[in-house]
Length: 182
Image (tube, rainbow, N blue to C red; front, side, top):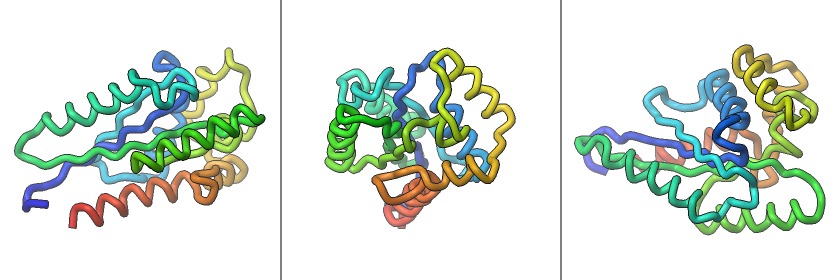
């Protein structure tokens, strides 16, 4: 790296739809509550509209567009973008098969992978939520994040690559940035 200050963007790819932003709300509440990243980092989201669209050309195009836009925004500073997929583990053979494909896909591209044990609501609320209530519950949680001992334990020990937790993956991103920027 040159002597110029480096700008960093984290692009988080989530399962949900852009109009509800449920996954985004839970993740942002975690980032803000635990002060996970330097305040000058940009956090951007790409919404897949379903986990099976993980390798969809439109999703990849959105990721590339965000990275390109960020790198061209301020020519006086170098920039870099990290990508993290945040998906629910769900259950059943089809989900397990799809999860293996997503793991391989992320590994091949050097993307981080955040796994929410069963689903994002189980992690942050401690229980499942009906489809019709997901948006409302996420807004309530984001407005007043309450990390009780139970949901904090779930959030901290959600599966990430089968062996880590959401805060650890965020820490890994910061550590990877530190190594690259030395």
